[in-house]
Length: 246
Picture (cartoon, helix red, strand yellow):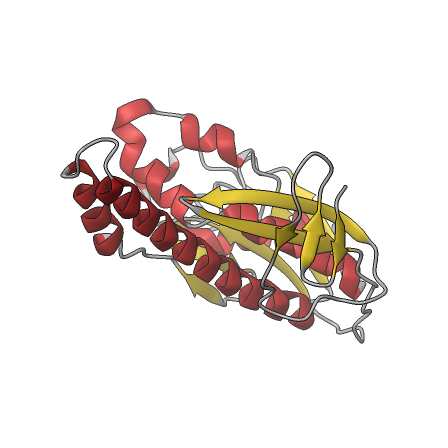
């Protein structure tokens, strides 16, 4: 573990690293983790400090959250978060500019650094958006239930035929959202659970009947037993809430 003194970090085996914090560093708190990452020719330092719990006043609200690519998030009370759509035009043009530069040249190194900075900006922008979203969720709901998804395994399935769907899944950054919800719920004194995701979209949230058709066959859920009709994602969110707090 490194040591932070003023605007300088000392890590065993490395020379002292001067940093320019984008906000004041917390005083009197224990440093839990330190990560050094190179983005092109720029070194960034991530510092993780021990945080005290900030228990929020209890609220009488319960929610199940379904994630997807049609809507980024669907809540069991009917609220939705629109899917994340990336404008990759600048990244694409910067990537193409790299291919036109001679390997080993200064121009190529500069083009690579510019591309890395753009990628970094987009990553930070998305992380900040996720923070705003997850903070609002934790403030508004006392009990939060999500699906326990193996996101990396899901994105590997299907090969080239599902490449477009896999890219859309990764763009929604569910893993970041779930990670933030976990620790923010703990800090705020909220209840947070992950439930079995099997058949949450195929099960009727009214009578419990399970449909056998593939999910791609319909966007609106219609129960063939009780004829309950509802948006498929909203139906799934209600099932997630039920499994989390039954």
